Length: 147
Image (cartoon, rainbow, N blue to C red; front, side, top):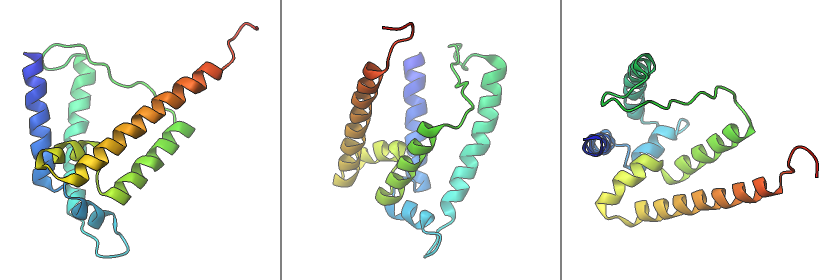
């Protein structure tokens, strides 16, 4: 049942991205072009998502379980650190240059177009590179207790 609900939620999310125009890079770039021909329509999409998210997260925290009874694992970190800022900048730069972010790019793969495929492959390569660099960095960290 949980797999079917996850599939239904993913399909609903993907359809919502397509209907709202989030999968159209030209529309996204138009939204981000504040100094040019700005298209504010995606602000309503984001505002609606935030509104739904506020209530959904409040309910999830209160229940501590999903609607299907699975335990909720909500993030607990509240600090702003270097990694968060750099990751946000990289995400924003990629979104502004390509007009895609991960969710809409995956939904756009269904169109069979070349651009979402190239973006998705580059995104996966970037994720893999991050994992390699993280492992290298953690291997170089000195252990506590002396050596």
